[in-house]
Amino acid sequence: MPLNSSPLPPAARVKIVPMDWTLIPKIAFAILGLALIVGAVPAFLIWNLYYRKSNRSSAKELSDGRVEFPPSQWTLMIWPLLVVYSAYRVIMRLEHRHASQADLISIAILGFAFLEHLISFPGTVAVTRDGLEQIYWFRKTKYVRWSEIVEINTGDKIARIEITGSDGTKIIHSKDLADRARLMLEIKQHCGDNLPPEFPIEGIQP
Image (cartoon, rainbow, N blue to C red; front, side, top):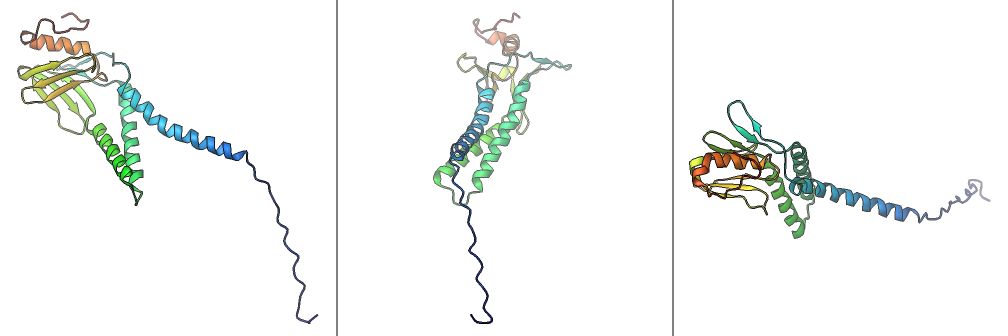
């Protein structure tokens, strides 16, 4: 053996660990559960915002004679969550540099939903001495004078009241807003001479 040679180190022992196949169904169930949560949360929020029963709270009478029909407290809590979720989904989709056509369509739909929720809230209807107002946080307030009302749609199937002015402006009282019956009464009191006799009062007598 040469003088400068040294013995080779012993071969390293490799520990063989058998595959734990029980982890696969656990991981699969975890992924499935996460997917259900991610999908169920926005579905639950949308259902509560659009498909719940009508808001049965009373209108607010203010000291200046105005009567306001705001959304319910539950709607006030649900709305920002939907806006944040829509914005989050749009941002996440935009981070993909190589988005497919389906992704672009999805981004457009989510972006539209985000803007629609943003500009249509809270939609509080207010009765004033001169007419009706619809108040928004991020767009101009709509206004229709009593003398300018040309059409009132109170269809039960849509569960809302649509009041149209002579210039096409629409005041919409949706089922999320308070006291539909009280609004009917206010319309009857201010426009009674121009309304048909069968105009509904819905349980409130003038």
